[in-house]
Image (cartoon, rainbow, N blue to C red; front, side, top):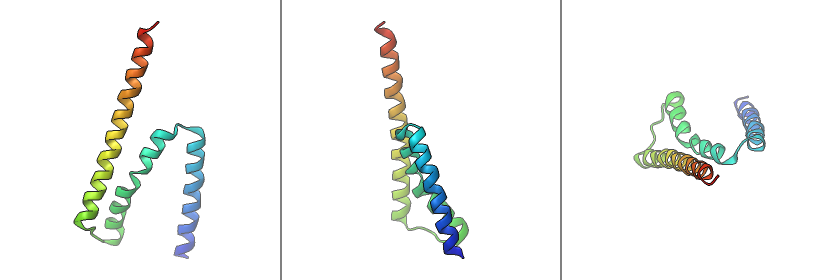
Length: 89
């Protein structure tokens, strides 16, 4: 029964992911998808009382930092492009 629930939730997640990628910008959506790694560690610790290794924690932190950094960099580039377009008119 547990495996059936996991399969159903996975199918629902994939359907919503497909809708999000069809209707929204792919860049921010894929950046948010990388946060799943750290979120999985948090849920694993809460529900299964399993502590990840030091290397796993370092990897999760690197994924989070790179995702946040990529989001900030993308926002700055887009803001810079918009401000330069306004200067040329």
